[in-house]
Image (cartoon, rainbow, N blue to C red; front, side, top):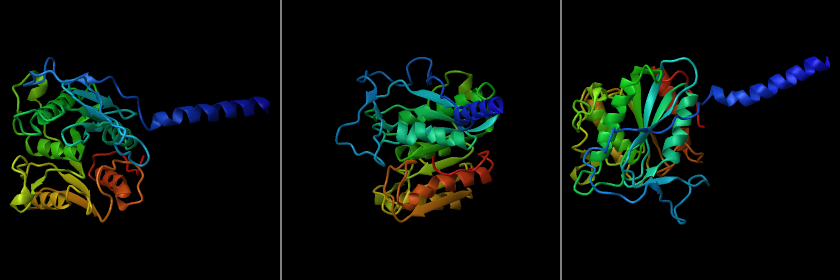
Length: 308
C-alpha cells in the first residue's frame, strides 16, 4: 500500500510539473529577418533596449517592456505543442511606430495563442519611424518578409501554410491591416526564395487598431489600406472611449463589408486603449474569448479559450 501511495504521489507531482507543457512551449531563439542590413537601413541608431521611464503607466498593476531603437528586426517562434501542422499567427505589438510594447502586446499574446493550439511568431519590427518615410514603410517590409519566411519554413516549423494569420495592436493593428491589404507585391527587392511565397495573411485580428481612417476626410479609410475582396477575413476590437477613436474601426469594418470581406467586430463602451490581454473591469476583458471562438469557428484555431 505504501508503494502504491508513493507511486501515486510521484505521478501526481510529475503531472503537475508537466501540465504547463500541454499549453505552451518554450520560444525559440530570435531569428534575423534579413540576411544582412534591412532594406534602406543606413543610419546607425542608439542601442536597442527597454525605453520605459519611471513615470510610464503600468497596465493592470504590471509594467510594460517598451523596446526601442530596433534596426535589426527579428522573428521569435512560439510553437504550439503537439503534432503539426498547426495554424499560426504573426503577432505585431503596438507602440505608435516609435516603440514596441513587447510583452503586453507580444510575448503574452503568443503564449495565449499557444493555449488555443496555435503557433505564434512574434515580430520585432523596425522602430522608431524612419525620417522621410511613411510611418509604416519599414515595418511593412518586415511584416511581408516575416509572413513569407513563415510560409517558406512551414514544413520545418510544423505550420499549416494555408492557416497563417496576423494579429496586431494599435500601430501593430495598422501594420496588420497594411499587410492584409498590400500583399500583391513586395515593397522591397526580393532577397531569396522566401520572398517568392505569398505574404497574404489567411486571416487578420485587429485589436484597438490605430490610423485606419483619415478623420479630416470624413473618416475615409487611409489610402495605404486599399481594402478589396482579396483582403482576408477580419476580426476587430475597440472601445468607445478609446482615444484613437472608435470610428477608425467602424469605417474600416464598413469598407470590409462593402468589399464582400467576412468581418466580425466587437465594440465596448469602456476600456480605453492599450490593455492587451491583461485583466480589466471593463467589457474589453472579454475580447480574447470572442476572438478565440471566432478563430475556432473559422478553422484558424484548434480550440477556443479565454484570457491567459
